[in-house]
Image (cartoon, rainbow, N blue to C red):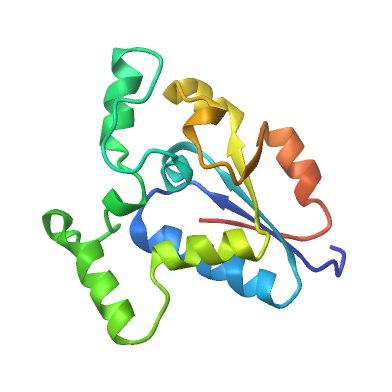
Length: 159
């Protein structure tokens, strides 16, 4: 492996704690000069949705149900101890209390730091989503082969 200062992250999960890890790693690496690429696939796509809150996004009734269940950053559950939706609220409280950036603040920092955000083409097709459904900072829609080529020469992590 090359010594290139490049970090590529695959964000598969839409869980609050896992997305927090993705954006903590991404912003930390970008802050010290790494090229950072995040490839959002399946439930990870929820982190980059344009429309926050529950919305019937999708191309048919089934994908619209998935779109509704994926409520954006403000609706992400925790992977454990979700407490009927209170888990992320508890984490946000603890993060603010301990002077730690919240998930939303980390996403904003990633945008400012120039982290490259990519959406997975195949997962978008499965979930009936279009590029317009995502925040404008999404640089491109890529297939796996293109993402692998883009991440070549650096480290890649799957979260």
